[in-house]
Length: 70
Image: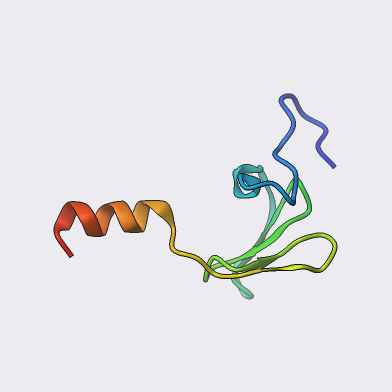
């Protein structure tokens, strides 16, 4: 799906969320990534083949909690 260099990580790779955002829908709270992944604001999503990506904590949120002592 990528047309740029370097190409985005594959939709089934562990770094799939590193792909470029190609479209946003703020009404739904979702973003379409260049690799075909659809991400939602709750950090869950869908892969292009329909597999569900379970919501997960964002790494920065965990780091912030640790830094702040929560």
